[in-house]
Length: 367
Image (cartoon, rainbow, N blue to C red; front, side, top):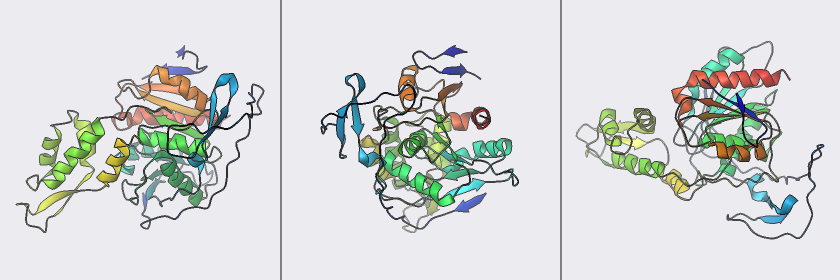
């Protein structure tokens, strides 16, 4: 065990009920969020100097001088309740949930191109060990949830916030996310820190990165498969995906996007062809615009002070040691744990993931 440099934390390198919504949700009325100065013993009070418009996005933004010449970014749109929302489809694992002593539920959010099925194994393991309900929503434009043109972190977070509020949980939930879902989970707790009791981020960090080139290639290849009547089976589709992706784990993940349907046009000799379960055009647009790689929250004004766990795949580049300083600024009570896996750590090592999450929850619920 060793300390992470400049972060003040320790990290270890270690080892059904289905609900489908209507087509679209409705916008929720706005309530302005008041940003209060910190009141803790080591608080830093910021100056109240002139406001300036200066930020690299299309939202309305003001800035003001902060401590040590830094800039506070006050972006009301990031925390707006006016964002149009959709009602998320979900399932809940309850087999081993305690009926006598209700506990804080767990919500697990999937990554880009995924759906709730990606985390069913972890959900069953957590339900059995922690004896509480585990919810698996489909994020907007994924799974059985509605399709909508806007796809960015404030919008996806607003959907999840509405989902939490609609459930009327007796205890504040523990929110878990992988990859894109991890950034959604982080956005939820930074927008509304009072909604969740703990955060678990699986292989993602609160930083903006260069848009990845792999997902646009996936979109292009999937569209080729859909438009090619000669590709008649999943074996044919997998063979086609081999042109752009060597990993069989990733290819199997991509194949879950495809659905084999009857072809009434007569173009396919077998009478069947593929269609996509998700709106590839909308998601490709979000990827190309940088919405998935982006991160607009600022630790001067957005912070989650409840316990947070960051799980990293040791063969992944998503959460480098250099990112830990950024993590500490947003999540001062964070911990880091590593698993020998790639970015797809939740599907490659579900038992190790669930054990780390359960250990984390059990330790902090006793406090």
